[in-house]
Amino acid sequence: MGKGKAQSKAPQRTLGQRIVRDKWLLLIFLPAILNVLIFKYGPMFGLVIAFKDYRPLVGFAKSPWVGWANFQRMFDIPEFGKILWNSITLNIESLVFTFPVPIIFAILLNEMRGRKFKRVTQTIVYLPHFIAVVIVAGMVKEFLSPSSGFIAHMIARIGRMSTVPMLLTNPSASHAIIILTSLWQNFGWGTIIYLASLSSVDPQLYEAATIDGASRFQRVIHITLPALAPVISIELIMAVGGLMSTSFDLPFLLQNGENMDTMEVLSTYVYKQGIASYAPDYGYTTAVGLFDSVINFILLIFANSASRKISETSFF
Amino acid sequence: MVSQTAAATAKPPKVKKLHKMNHISIGDIIIWIIMIFCIVIVLYPILSIVSGSFSNSELVLRGQVGILPKGFTTRNYIALFSNKKLWPAYAYTLLYTVVGTAFSLFLNFCCAYPLSKRTFVGRRVWNFLLMFTMLFSGGLIPSFLLNTQVLPWMDTIWPFTLSGCVGAWTVIMIRTYFESIPSSLEESAKIDGANDVIILFKIYLPLSMPILATFGLFAAVGQWNNYFGPMLYMHDPSKWPVALLLRQWLFVDEGTGASGVGGSEQAYAIPQVARNYTAIVVTMLPIICVYPFIQKYFVKGMMVGAIKG
Image (cartoon, rainbow over all chains, first blue to last red):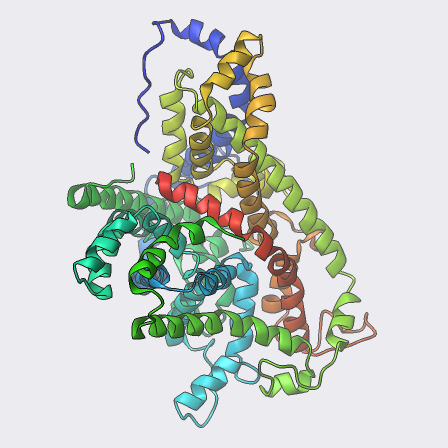
């Protein structure tokens, strides 16, 4: 990725000459770069309202500056600490439990014999990735229902409980529900990136190892895993960089009055206070969003430089 | 459907076969059992929803329906299809998907082409601007205000089809694809007097159909499943896509008993659970039906990204 260096084979020209030379390319480029500048950089510019008491009727420019007051409020509101804690714990738990699964599954797929069976398996396990998250969350809700849900009944049977548990309204079950649901949706799809890098491993390596008497397990440890190491570290960077960017959909769809204690995360909080509220507080919610983005940015930079030092692979 | 993954990852087993012939070890059997277990975990929920939608809702409510329908009935479907909201929602979903996919393909394509040219003026600046959007974003509220207050786009389709549809990742992958097209084609066209616009649409466009199909499908599935954009910007329920309608039925109408589909306006009143099961199947169906045929394009797209990354 990092080969952005322009090769200066062409003779030196002035900027004006180059613009004239590339006029058609610029014409093609214009709508796309305008889209990026307006819809990606426009909101970044709009982040200044985190430092304002923004009132839509007064307008963007005339709203008064309030310094760090919006950020101050964040830490004054007692519920904010809990929401931040929920986001962090949910993300760390997701990372720990969902990150290794596709790697293990990809290794198993790679070791699997029977080409047709393998292809069928892949086709089936990729499927949930394409089902809308609304549908997946809806299915979770139905399956956890104490009356009709098969998962709730199954848990009752396994745990030998006298009554069927109310899982969706139980705050201590909500993180597990979210993690297992996203695992179901993505464990198969997540293998593709690992399988892709395994496809470039020279088969002769396996062949030579087999001749030398290496067991299947030894081949996995000494050939497959080292081949996966660079991809794993890049995926880990992205995962760590995204530690603060809580996924919105599952917590939002599955939260209810009873499980709010653990289900409310930063992204759902911003949505509810800033958009779904009758009296939206734009300045404050933008400050919460900015806080989130900045931490994410820092995490990403850290993870990247750590990875560069440790494994000599970096993302940018 | 010899997908790229299958072709590529099948290599090591082939080598093993040479040496071990058809010997099947305990390890193979364990792996097969794990795979069957995974297949069951993926398919069981889907099949049980389908089975529940064809079952007598009384039995579903008591949790007695498994993977096969009990008290087989098509009543739930008749009730759902007579719902006046469902068909317009499908039509709007289709509209949003087509418009969103068209914008996304066109703009990403037009963004990638100039960037694939080594000497393009300002190339490094543009690349940086694009890459930076992967690291940092303005967040939800400023985007919302941009689309609704700076631009008067509330209750229009632009905020979730046009706004921000140029993605750095997609552009990088299309750009990489363009870079693999031999430049001799372009040079000979230039000698014949063609400009870049003509070259892009007459030479590059036909050659990049495979990658456009892949990204078009990604964009289309994303848009088909999108409820969040319409939830933010479409306040008129008569223009909701299916995904948002389903969200309303499954998560908001909750607790109103027999509702939505039934109620006073409909001839068939069915319990909420039956409607939910049936609505889930009906929304999921189009994706599941086309999925086996388009799956290889998705995998191909991911492979391009993975090898590049």
